[in-house]
Amino acid sequence: MPRAQRERQMIEVAEVVFAERGYAAASMDEIAERVGVSKPMLYEYFRSKEGLLLACIREARAELRHVTEQAVVGAAGAEDAMRAGLHAFFRFIRDRRQAWSLVRHEITLVGTSAAEEIEATRQQQTDLIATLMSGYFDDSDTVRVEAAAEFVVGGCERLAIWCERYEDLPPETVTEYAMDLLWGGLQRLTSR
Image (cartoon, rainbow, N blue to C red; front, side, top):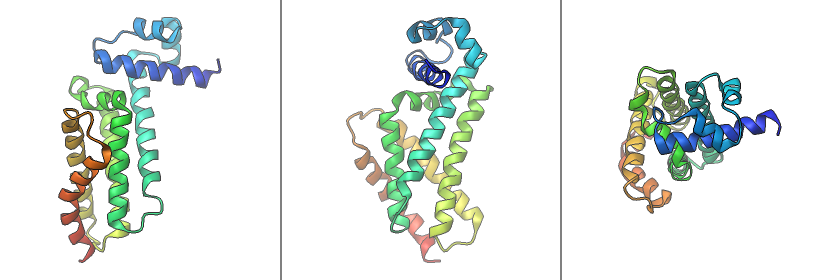
């Protein structure tokens, strides 16, 4: 199997094991066994269990960025872009539950490089939202736009956690809940 394909397989299996067991309880032995490789091979690719976790988080962050950026391409305006971006986020959370679990249980990772990677994921989404908002909104106050983007990211993260109680709630419905709450305030920025 080509190296890139094997690495991808290792990351996919590790994501599942980390989500099932939590980072602390997950073992490289189990991950290696599920992948069908030796434990030393895992270490050769990722150097440590934390290195493997970082690879999982980076992979999820790259995919989240891709789906949210693609979702807003061709948006007819600010409201359409916000709705499309939110929908992409909530669909990602539903479709990639294991990846979301890594972010969701970050408290166990405090003080590690993984916590920094998770924060980098939040910052990526905040920067993307702020960039989009600055293109659509009339507000030249970059601090206000950044604060609004932080609020959107934080609110959506909490809403995604809430959604865990309602696994059958479709992303379209959650998107509308978020739009109902967020758009009224954000819309005010378009008329300044």
